[in-house]
Amino acid sequence: LTNTKSEAAAYAFTTLTCIPGVVPYNNSKIQLLDLPGIIEGASKGKGRGKQVIAVARTSDLILMVVEAAKAELQAKLLTKELEDVGIRINC
Image: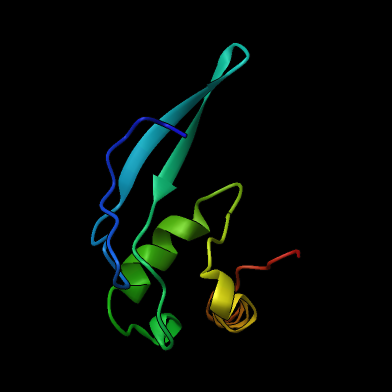
C-alpha cells in the first residue's frame, strides 16, 4: 500500500519495530504503521505489548490483519488485549 519495505516470512512476528508508510489519497496523505504483533498478555506488559499498545492508542483507526486459518481466535485475542487497556473496538 505504501511502497515501504516490511519484512515478511513464513513465521510469526517478523515485524520487530514500528514501520511507517504514507498512502496518498486525493489531496492528503494517510500514515500507515506496520506494528509488531500483539501477543496474549500484551496489555499486562508481555513482550513489547506496552510499546505497541501505546502507538495503537494514538491511532484514529486500527486495522487488524489476522491469519485466515486462525482469524476468529486471533481477532478475539487482539480485541481483548486492546479493550483491557481501554481501547474500544467496533467490529
